[in-house]
Length: 296
Image (cartoon, rainbow, N blue to C red):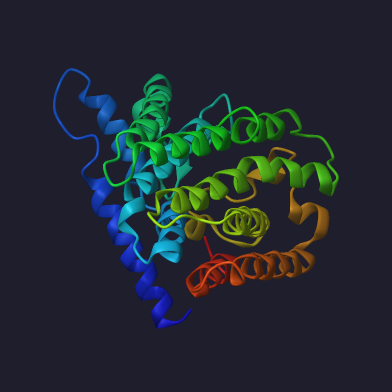
């Protein structure tokens, strides 16, 4: 990655981290609930979704700041989904980013409530944003709700669980991850466009969705590869869990060499999606390249 990409990424990351750090503070009879929410929200990570919201806004209007509340909201919703994914009734994971998962640290019932509260807080953050107009806030809530609900993230998680142990073909596997991964990435991109005071075009809206679709597939294929070839220390969680649970993955369907080709193909398509739609797509293209080569 170039020094310019790293500088831009770190600037967006710092903006988000400063804002999230101020969330869910205070004392009271439900202090432990707030602690559990902060524990998961501030656990680190690449913050891909909030960075996408900020940078798509910047690609349209030249500034990131209008999308800051939306960026925080999409990260809160993403964090809720991770807490729930890790629960014993779902994936039953004990580590996330090298730390005990929320239910391991705080108990299952409190982790469930922390996830619920983060989901609600995400929409509260969008609804009450003063950086954008009430009309934009309403549109943002629609975008996030569609991505998070029964037709996308929840549907993807449902299919992921009910198909566990079944031999899936590539079409079925792709559909699961378009729902589970690409949908929220798409929402992040669209939230950035929605926050911009400069009006987006239909072409830009479609380009953002196409970018997220390809980025999400590349991200998931790379994830499946890392579950085979990485280490627990690098990933911050146990490796080989997909195989242990009898899950069909892109790695089991194709093997690692073909997966590398597919990651490169989807990454290239992601870049092509935005190259003709935005005046300065360089960061978005570089971000796709960066994620394609990630080690965790």
